[in-house]
Length: 221
Ligand SMILES: CC(=O)CC(=O)C(=O)O
Ligand SMILES: [Mg+2]
Image (cartoon, rainbow, N blue to C red; front, side, top):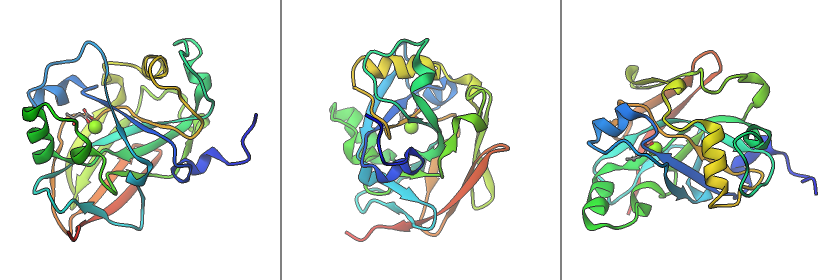
């Protein structure tokens, strides 16, 4: 049945945020991770969303919050075990996203074999831009994506470098987790991830499409 809600405000829907890790070889290598042969997946709750105008918070338990700029894919039609051929029919559009990561906590979790929840799923860990309709991006694998901190370029990548394409990811994820209208898939970050601190200004963009700005604040315990 068609929904009365509009997917252009996907961040208000309370749906899933499914993140792909290590989808750019140069980023996997900068963190000394193996290049994956299958997508690495993790989740963020919808409470991770933050929109421009509100601050990105450094969790009180972290001393090393990293930026990861990523292309987000907004799902427009539910599906399970979607074929790669049909995958783009399930995509409503895109968003520019940040996968904010408490790297010190993630490193500890990796050592202990624990899940990444504290490192990746805290409040404000998913800053997002406005919705970008599918029509505005005819080829999502031909986009320059960048991020500056206090006007200094930190990340610059090209979505053509993704190891796993968007149709592959939609198909693969939907064979494990049912996709619903309003879900968001973060497609992984290019190289250049680094720390931000209180009062920094993060400016990220998709060349020729849009950019967004966030300031960083320390969370009170
Ligand atoms: C190691 C990571 O944090 C993986 C990740 O999120 C990525 O985008 O790559
Ligand atoms: Mg990421």
